[in-house]
Image (spheres, rainbow, N blue to C red):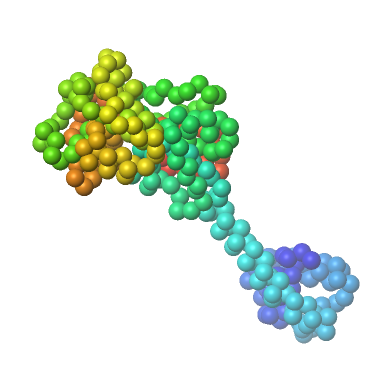
Amino acid sequence: MDPHLLRTYVTVARLASFSEAARELGYTQSAVSQHIAALEQDLGAPLLTRRPVLPTAAGERLLEHAGPLLLRLEAARADVVRVAAAPDHGLTLATAPTALGPHVLAALPASGVTLRVLPREEVPAAVATGTADLGLVDGLAAPSDPLRLPDVAPLTTHGVAEEPVCVLLPDTHPLARRTGLRLADLADARWLDAPDTGLPLAQLRAANGGHGFRPALRYDGTDIRALTALAGAGHGLTLLPCSAATGVAGTVAVPVEQPRVVHRTELVCAGAPQGAAATVARALAERR
């Protein structure tokens, strides 16, 4: 049965008037009469007497079904609207650990996202192969300069954030009270080699003319807290975005003043994002 015809029938039966039903539904009286006639023809039985307007026995039986049917239709409509308004589920976001800055976390939907924290060199491959819908990569760069990504596939990148970088020192370190540091002055210090968590030493060397920054300890992991704990225990220095380096117990985060570099985060996608991926990409762009 056509639900529009059924709704018209219920309204006429409730008001006991074709004209009143037409006024409430916003139809002409002729249209209401046509609806009732079409429904009676479909069911093969008269549903209303005309003078007075009352349900027939068949009409009474139809009314018993009509209420729950129309209610279920309204519930279905509301459910579809609710789902359409909510973020799509099933979005997988591959990310480097330090790419998850406060601006990125604030842009994520409340539900429906799976985060895969990967070594930063693996993020583009995850997007290219479809194991992730979007990727977030980060690195050291001059302000507004794009990052260099592995050439794994034709991928699109969008800059989503830039922030200052800090050297994380134990609070007992001789340089802990400095207000700013030059990378060149730290080229001979003992450093933590944590390519998948801290900013890679190779990038520090590149920023310093290609030399220095010898590793004292290598950390093969993606847990930032483990890395900052190693720095606090004096096992070596590490370079991090200031948001990740600030407030770590037993350490001091000192900004890098020279050279003029930033921690840059970029969104990686294969083609134009769709669905929930487009929602996240749009939110990140707005926060940028």
